[in-house]
Amino acid sequence: MRFDILTLFPGMFSSPLQESILGKAIEKGLIEIHIMNIRDFALDKHHVADDAPYGGGQGMVMKVEPIARAIESVKLQNPFAKTIYLTPQGRPFDQDLARRFSALPHLILLCGRYEGVDERVRELFVDEEVSIGDYVLTGGELAAMVLIDAISRFIPGVLGSERSAQEDSFYHSLLEYPQYTRPFDFRGHCVPEVLLSGNHSMISCWRRKEALRRTSSRRPDLLSRADLSEEDKKLLGEILHQDKRGKAGNEF
Ligand code: 6GU
Image (cartoon, rainbow, N blue to C red; front, side, top):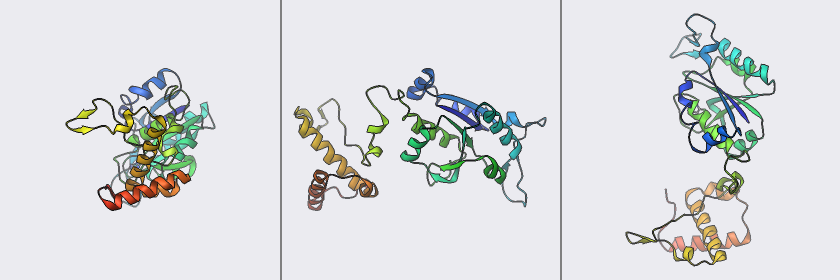
């Protein structure tokens, strides 16, 4: 899969894309990332890519012509590339959208800065607008990295053979169960005995119950969307009964 990033700050992408899983995916040729500086597509002497807003007011607006030229230069190579504009006004990004985007061969990620882009960029060039949450960033660059990371995990080979994004928690709409590794006893805080029992059906049952407990306490909104079995409902009943008698409840 190919990503073309259009940004005023290309330096923001260099080291995150060289590390760890994404770095290896690029080395293996599973994903291809092109960083383009929008200023390189401004034809005036000073490569100006922004200007004051018509009508007055605070800040600067990203000009339409350099963005148009940058997008058109990518579309010349692939007319079917889809353009995503990263903006707090966009549709909230989630695991379903990540999965849908991962099926596309080529995305252009347009990173907004300042007061955003000239409205004609939206009208003429943008296929979808995406936000990564209800808070304001200084620009779309970190949001573009978030998209690339979440989308790439769905591309076969990126996570390695033993794991797949399909197995992850949001896929099953539950949060992950607690994990432990050595030592068994850390300052008197011990690992639950069941995990040392070697009884795999008991271990699976414990993990499912703890995933349900964590989800019901932290993200009850996810539980209502989850596909729960009769066994899950029984475990949830036990959890509610236990929590009524003591501790837990909403962890936040
Ligand atoms: Cl995509 N851009 C900016 N500037 N802020 C954001 C965002 C995007 N998503 C959440 N906050």
